[in-house]
Image (cartoon, rainbow, N blue to C red; front, top):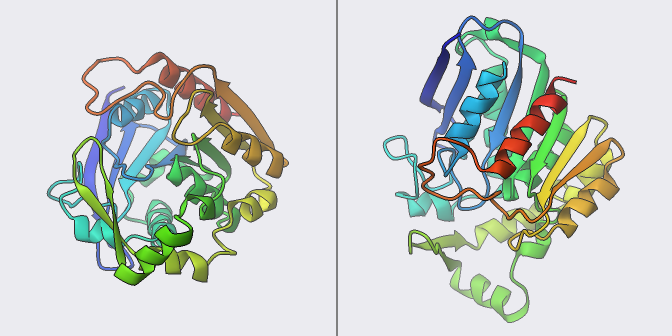
Amino acid sequence: MSLRIHRNIPLKGKHGRPVITDVFYEEDLKNAPVLVFCHGYKGFKDWGAWNLMAEEFAAQGIVFVKFNFAFNGGTLEQPIDFPDLDAFGENTYTKELDDLEVLFDWICGNDFPSPEAIDLSNITLMGHSRGGGVVVVKAAEDRRVKKLVTLAAVSDFGDRFPQGEELKAWEQKGIAYIENTRTKQQMPHLFDFYEDFKESEERLTISRAAKQLEIPFLIIHGTNDETVEVENAYDLQKWSKNSRLFLLKGSDHVFEASHPWEKEELPLAMQQIVKKVVNFVEL
């Protein structure tokens, strides 16, 4: 079988910007499971080893879908990195949940490439880092999600906002900047980001969503993650009654990958992740 890849499909978003999407699958596939992958904060669908990971999942008979959140700072012309910092600054958690709604409607509709390839009763949602928190919330409210996987996921959005004087300064200025250590860009956040969170705080409380989950939930985390501590994984496991925890001893937040990734093989930790997730999806 040969690999088919559809890149940079622009799905019409709910807020004026497209949800740019890729699909990877083997030709002539029938009724295969679907795995939808969400990138994290300051992330994008083509970061590091994600494309190689997509190919590996497709080679295992899974239809792999990955995408850029509409306000992640990428564009259709340049989906890698962050040419549109204005869009990045306007992003919110609720917009990301809306993007997932658009994506699921498309997967389940008539415009999906080779709809005969997919089994809509076997859709797994997977998210990395902040995207991991988003997928927990989405899985709790969308019955189309049958299984859930998180990679180095956050367990509390509220804890990751500034507090005290830093929060007041953000409110007064209406905008705050965080440096991207790789690109050296000053990446903006409008205060609307925080206000949107507070307005939807109950919906965006990951612990509430995790406790509501009935579906199988695989939690993957590296024990040496300095960006999102492994305690987040223990929290998710504690809250979700149908969860299992897979810890990668000594692995970091990106499972030994980096951007750009120019090797022909995945890092060992990501090879282990692919194997574990394939087994979980096919159960």
